[in-house]
Length: 327
Image 1: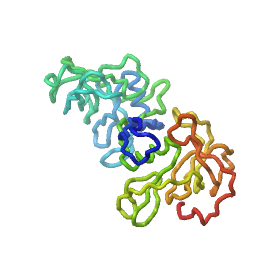
Image 2: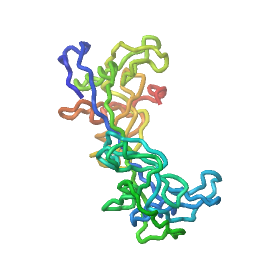
Image 3: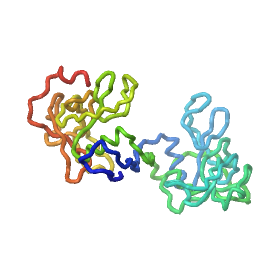
């Protein structure tokens, strides 16, 4: 985030707009059935497998069910490592995590012996070297682990078709049984006027929302508009810092790159003076003693720009009627 352009003593004065790079990343772990397991294990062994449908077509990549009839598919077929480009698009500026770090073509390749096309990268000196109908072959990765990246890319090829191999049992030593697919989105986020004021206030250890001029509800964090009335909000309201736990969950799975030991509690917290519960981690209390109605307050770490967690205040629990409308 950029630094504020004005001093903390003038919270409503113009400030430098906030912009921050954000990364949303989620590693998706899945187990593999017999077809996908055989396909990925085959790539590790420099073998491309497809699956035969009831009408005799060979699908590459293979699927577990016929896309036309929904019939279960299990008959594996080895196809060639050479094929024909059916369509393509030039990529002049490869992004992080793409197959090649120099400009390349995305291509759909119908491998010899297959009836469908496989999407991958084609190494070529420029778009003038790529055309529909050109012949290509697989360039295998030097180190293969049982993933689509075992195909490093395709490359132009003018030799004879590779031997397709025919029926295949799909049996390999040490088959791949599961994969982790990282989903990642990189972008720059500009929070806008309402959220920027909220973030600047948090850096000053204050919690500021905005009031709807029509229904008079106070939203924290502010959204710039009332989601109920659809009108702009501009009236800042300082809320909290104390609040009430409305609902919560106990987290038992440790997230990647998160330095918090499990189990821990994440809760919706209705701050005093707010009409919308925000979420935060609960600390300073055993996880199995957190409860609805627990009164909490924010805890900032040294130099922190937002509360690290919320802890019990020692006050009596709030009455259910005081927060039931925010459940």
